[in-house]
Amino acid sequence: MGRYILAKLWQGVIVVLSVVVVVFILTRLVGDPVRVMLPLEATQEQRDQFEAQLGLDRPIGVQFVDYVSDVAVLDFGESLWQRRPVMEIIVERAPATLLLTFAAIGLAVALAVPLGVVAALRPEGVVDRIVVLISLIGLSIPQFWLGLLFIVFFALTLGWLPTSGSGTPAHIILPALTLAIPAMTRLVMVVRSTMIDELNAQYVRVLRVKGLSPWRVIAVHALKNSAVPIVTLAGWELIRALSGYTVVVESVFAWPGLGLTAIQAIERQDLILLQAIVFLTAIMVVALNLLLDILAKAFDPRIDLRAS
Image 1 (tube, rainbow, N blue to C red):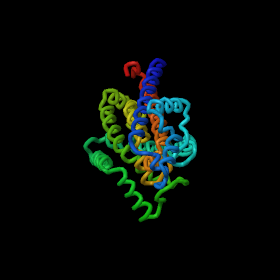
Image 2 (cartoon, helix red, strand yellow; image 1 turned 90 degrees about the vertical axis):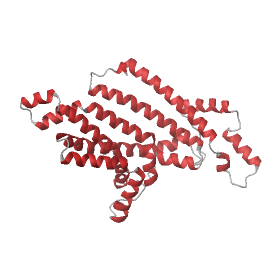
Image 3 (tube, rainbow, N blue to C red; image 1 turned 180 degrees about the vertical axis):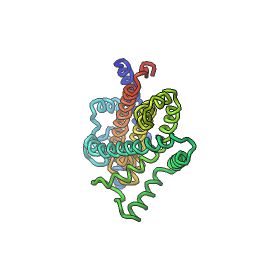
Image 4 (tube, one colour; image 1 turned 120 degrees about the vertical axis):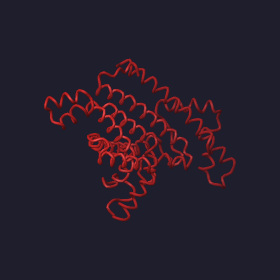
């Protein structure tokens, strides 16, 4: 296990370094922060001075070495847009994104597991067909459109929930539901298929012959043996949300997280802030991937991590 973790950490370092290189190159190729940050009437001398202040007048190789050196100690400098330390902004905004993501995926799992189990009890039955239909509809609806639909119905028409922002538990309901539904529709199909396989397995028949109650067989034995694919997909949904899908939801609901901040940084061509957000997101994704493998091993000791 220890050797596997070290190997995964090394792979993670390579991934993060690759992200650093790609983001550095792309942010230098797209846009001109000097033109964005200075007024139109700024003189060429002022532009040159500001460019020197940002270090953009130096050779690209020198810029990259300086950038990597600063990133190694988590010193991302000052945001061009907000004029304050980048880490201060990230520490301020990251909890909102993490809260939204974990709430949404937790809700998705809480809905998907019982729905998938009930559907698996009678394949091709009425309940199963309804669950499959709901899943297909949920997969087909664009996330931004789903969010707008929720705002129109629950906030504007019924007036039950706020349209946007944060600050109270009510504010997180619509964003979390919007992020959770697509994840739930994918999870419910995995729960359904794995539970159908488990319920048709020989050991389930033996347990039923021994007199165990059906729900004990399902909850204690069949569902436990289905845990690895369910946990794996739930973890993948968590990674998927953190690596980009929260951006859509945060933008629709003006949720003050890293996703909305990244969009604002792109609009204002704040290269420093954008690089920091992407870098720290890559670290979170690598860490979650490692944690996911360890959880899978915990649920099923037969898994050989050395073969991964």
